[in-house]
Amino acid sequence: MPEWNSDHFPPYWAVPFSSFAQVTEFLREVETACLSHGRPSDGTVNFEAVARCLHALGRPDRHYRSIHVTGTNGKTTVSRMIAALLRAGGMTVGLYTSPHLTHFRERISVNGRPISEEALVDACNRVKAFMDVEGLEKEQLSPFEFLTVGAFFAFNAAKVDYAVIEVGIGGTHDATNVIAPDVSVITNVDYDHMDLLGATLERIAEAKSGIIKPVTPVVCGPMAEGPRAVVTARAADVQAPLLLIDRDYEVSEVLQSGFQTVCSIRVGARRWDQVMLDSPATFMATNAALSLAAYDVLRRRGLVPDLTDLDVQTLYERIDLGACCEVYHGTPTLLVNGAHNAPAMAQLATTLRHTFEGRRQALVVSIAKDKDYSAMIRHLAHTSADRIIFTRCPQETAIDPALLAEQWRGQTHVAAEIVDEPDLAVARAIQAAGPHGVVVVTGSVQLAGLSRPAPALAPNH
Image (cartoon, rainbow, N blue to C red; front, side, top):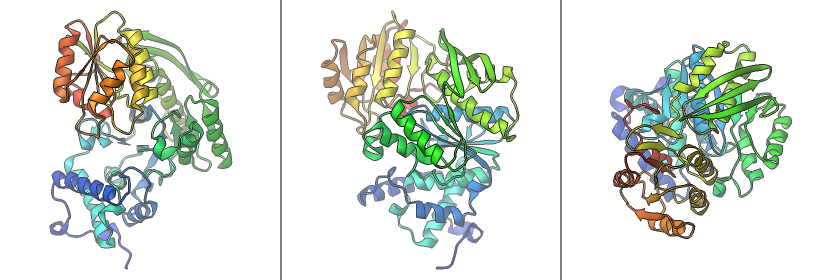
């Protein structure tokens, strides 16, 4: 078969997609095909097909610099923070994250704005044309692989200077692990996706450390001794400079101030005091330190400009945290949190105890079937919730709310209700919390996205 490249892209009348709706319908068909052939839509990657497609498109991922981010929790937030720092440095920045909150195009953004439907359709047409010419069946590129290649093309078309690329799952066998980043980031290692990554923290760390590239700096967040040893060994094997928290960079003087967090951050010999984050979740301070450490790696290599202390102190207060402990003030107060595994739920429980003690709390919860729901419920039972409402998010394969309620009743005497429709569940929580209470929506990124107020209503307002 003759080699194909994007210069041979078919004329307009022959393009596979003419609308965004056709793209989303095709991706649904691809997911169905993958599942019917026993291939997880976000599991083992077809690196050969991804590499061939990128080569045919002229390796768009080599036309801009990139940063690769993985981790059990916090990788989307850290990716957003790094992108914001790069934009503050005057860069045009692409950001690739998953899953989306409310709209599919959120996964691919340029300078903080989702790409247009036209740009996404164009990128997907390039990928689909390659599949057609090569005779690839739908199950040979998963939806995530297809969209990853499309994102790389879209970033090149937008002429970005940098792309911040978030791993889908793990690292070693993720479709994003074809890039050559300037710095890699591992936010943390904890229990999630054990069916794909392994049942121990060390096995999970092996998967995530797969994004570490030869002689490419890697910034690591807090993790237990076992996984840290795995990451350290991988970095040593490929001679990748390793930056560790509490050694090469640190966060200190972390204080909750109302519904915000204030902290000090040190990276090497530099220090920033009074850094303000627009969230009551104090763990956000660690995410901020991670992002600053990654940016400083680039700065020391002369790849990005220095930022003033004032830039850093005020920048984090303006970052869209993407449904990670976002507070919206009203009657009642709304806290939206996409915590979707046990470690994240433990952090949320701590935030609720420290922030809303003494106020009536009503929780709305949906959990996906592939999660350790019993551990998640156990952490929620240690909050001071007055009512919990279990629902079923239609955007994912959710656990039966009745099963969640049964698990809850075995842990606490706090009343539980079942309301299948998420919007009705939130309405019921508003009623239960009362005008001076707090409604907390959690357990699922998709549920958190559905429950966020309109974009015009910014968090903490």
